[in-house]
Amino acid sequence: MNALEYVPVPAFEDNYIWVVSDGRHAVVVDPGEAAPVRAYLAKRGWRLSAILLTHHHQDHVGGVADLLNGQGVPVYGPAGEAIEHVTQRLKNGDRVNIAEPALEFSVLDVPGHTSGHIAYFQAADLAGTPHVFCGDTLFACGCGRLFEGTPAQMLASLDSLAALPGATQVHCAHEYTLSNIRFALACEPDNPELQAWRDKASDLRAGNQPTLPTTIAHERAVNPFLRAGDPAVQAALQEALHEKVSDRLAAFTLMREWKNRFR
Ligand code: ZN
Ligand code: FE
Image (cartoon, rainbow, N blue to C red; front, side, top):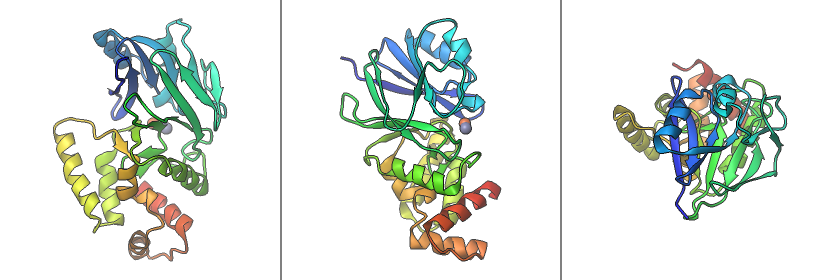
């Protein structure tokens, strides 16, 4: 059996539409637009076998109808959101089994960015590496905005992603890494792994390369939204915002609000 390929197809300004293929068939995650995916599949000679959706935002679902073009391929999506063309509605703990490419996912509910947002966790590829497709919940060095959920929900969702194996490859849906790193450095200026990541990510972007996938272990080390319990992070928040940080949820809430207005 062929090793699987995980390809970020760029779309819009800064979206990635992830395509997973065994060299013949392909699963497409969050196709916000159809044209770049169709062009990529045609270039590689890959045939669409399923679509996975993480949440209802247009930049993640807008290309579904066009991509399907009448084909009867399954479309997986969150049970808690009304999305057109979804054929399989999923909730926490559900399993997804796809024959070609051979893929098995377990579903995690990760509300916060939207209230029904889900993530797809693959426990092992043929090499034993785990993968997660987390939409707009966890980003490299950041997290999604809270459009529909509460800070407590988002923190719990990020905790469930952070609890995945450290080697898990994290396939995020946007290239926000450099601006996220700038904010992360404001929260944690003395984190050496974060400083090293800033240099590496800057080089990647200067060469027009994606900074993704990241890994869960790396995000635990550099992502301030996974580090809201860290005393150094809490001290930096107190100093920058002149607000008392009483606990981890308060730190996370302040951090998310600060990021919304951070330039
Ligand atoms: Zn979104
Ligand atoms: Fe998005």
